Image 1 (cartoon, rainbow, N blue to C red):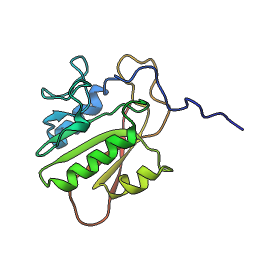
Image 2: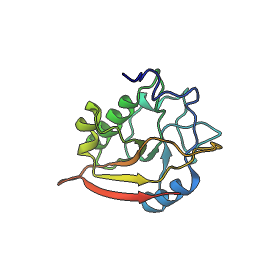
Image 3: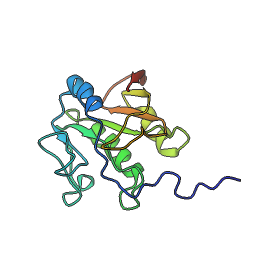
Length: 159
């Protein structure tokens, strides 16, 4: 049987969002806040970094970009997803757009992502920061926003 220990972990958690991918999304949403960044990789003028933990703040009125740490033991991916969902349900003025792995077999996917307004499945392997290769796992853009009706599904092609 295959070993899955450390399968989804990385020594580095501060991967910069691919610029072209962000620009395409920013044209659509006009982001006001980067919810998980630092001074070297933020995509918005306003941002939360590790010292000013976004998970401890309300996100009222935020049009937020969120590329959370995927494998951090300190800040679990599921905590970011739960927070994004809850904040957008609490505040009708809040939108959160997340770039995350498409882990459709997890309980957090069923509980939160399947209630998102939109899911944009990424075709291709975007390169993060100065990485030589694109990420080898499937990625999805999750748009959390108050809505009625079914989740809309899209394909989003990147190079």
